[in-house]
Image 1 (cartoon, rainbow, N blue to C red):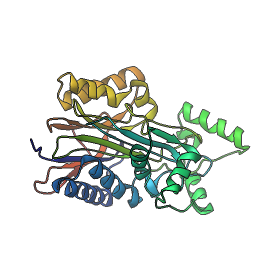
Image 2: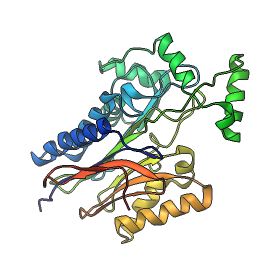
Image 3: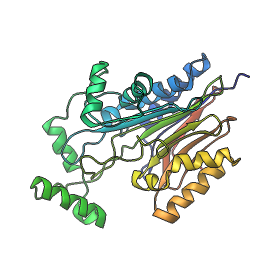
Length: 317
């Protein structure tokens, strides 16, 4: 039985309002992904295309817009999963690649593995001649350092991280002005064959040590997809999402019969209660019902089922 296709995408959850250019970019990404679904392409293709638009924009914390880590290097994570055969692919700490989501797709399609990390993930992407992005210039590194918050605005944990890195690097200070607004991107989709898929791409979080890995490339944490349940793509503080294995827990709730909104609210409440975490979720059930849910003030997100225009806003129930 042919399903009516649907795609959802997000550009991160947090406190900052969506900009006009982010709104337009997210609508463009949804339109690009839905066009493929409308013509019968699999959900994986729609996910990859949608996320590539967001990675290439420089407006989000992914691809060419990814944050620099404390040593001034841009390292990125991405993952994809499809629900029919539970195939998945991911990369962590990959460098110099314009579209980390494409590298994650290659891990899924060209290897027997699920996750490649670090320099080997970068070499893998080079082998398949993926589009590259230039290394950050000294000026970009200085700007990234200047964009870090003043010490008096840092939490205790952030100050500890900064002091640890300064000891490692022999630096006295890395702090400057206000923080960045860019956030992680992700998408979920249902295709005409009834297969669901999920994906995500990120440059991590501000004030992170080189080598830190968040939830995005961890299957069951940042994303999950299963035709017997649905598809989930997360955004928020990765450390809290990992501790609860949020994407899989939401998918398990869907498989047990919960609706997308109630499943998301239940698990996000657990994230807040157990680990004081804040996150947002795209949740798409196998029957096409969906929810965009967040316990942050805002989530930059939207959806499209081919009717009218893509719906994009930064607050959902």
